[in-house]
Image 1 (spheres, rainbow, N blue to C red):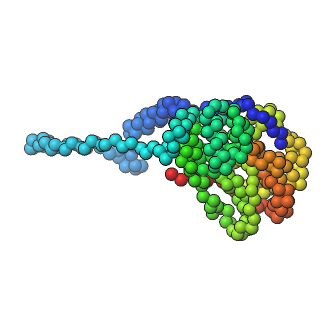
Image 2: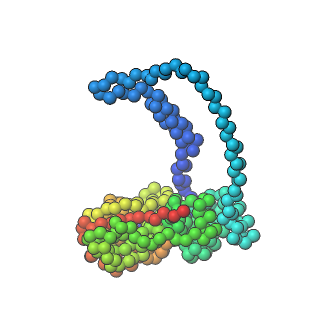
Length: 312
């Protein structure tokens, strides 16, 4: 896998405008109101129900005179300040950065704060930089996954607050689908681990590297290449599969479970660690571990990849 230095070359697609979504919602509501006003089809074989007839009243209707007691006015409550526990200087830094969104290529004083906080959390072991580098972008993604946040590589309010409040990592508990009959490769994106199970029993665990911020081999565009969550079956195994994008020798000892996602040894992971990422594959750092998985995982084995979400 070829890597390079960063200046941002592509920007993720902007989300749909909330106003446009609101207009669509009003349109649906209007359609429902129109449908609600249509005549109800009568039951088959029976006459249409007749309209109720009111008989004349012999007594004048009593006027309602009950008065409703005024409801007590709700006292507005001020939500607690999530930055209250910070020092005055640190709180000032965070308040200045909360409205800002950082991504690969961003620069400025908030990048300095971001790198320092990611370093404290154990996701940024590299030196300071004036801008968000490739390593920084992948550190953001790995941190977001570990806290159950949306892993998009963009540092917005949720990520800032998680850093400020020292949000805990999500649970390491494996989902029940991993504890089934046969061999299962269970990949936890939050903790970057592959757990190898047989008949519901954990046999081995491996540290892995997953998809992230990387450069496309042909277009040379930098973007996020996520590893997809889901359940698949191993359909093939190849010692040195051919790769149109990455050439020969790029994916040794591939255990294949999806056309664009394999479990394989990564020389890049072995050299660069988490400063880079895969293009969606599950990278194994040690060749001997990749060989063990390759030899012991049968065709038809289940591969389950999951991301644990943060609990509120």
